[in-house]
Length: 150
Image 1 (cartoon, one colour):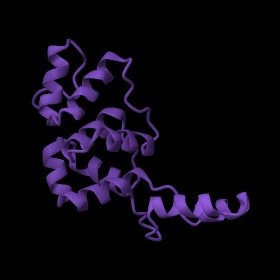
Image 2 (image 1 turned 180 degrees about the horizontal axis):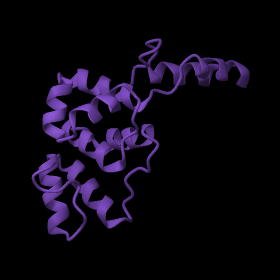
Image 3 (image 1 turned 90 degrees about the horizontal axis):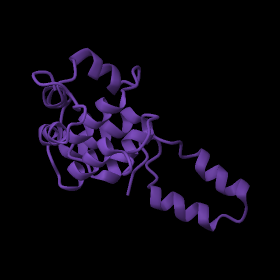
């Protein structure tokens, strides 16, 4: 159950309010009161839940320090591989990873793409970022990151 950082209304509560609305106008009013979160807000929420600081994420993801802080303050929009690296380091589920990808304005993992299938397998089996990268190499696919620079 996601919590909106702006007004603390849970997603399930918002859904209940929309379902119980007597008109679409009323339903839209609830929705407008609860704007979609941004990628960086979702990352902050996950980091907080997992007890991780920005320094931990920078070390684990290998993302350059200033670029990571730009992502966290919302001034930079990460690419798909960066979102995946962040998600793997946050140890998210497949559902959470696809949510992060959507919030970043990117396509979700798609089972019919071989590369994406490897990522889906890795997430489902709780692989680390390094294990997922090794799986891609074994499958003859492009890596999530290159060796020496995660």
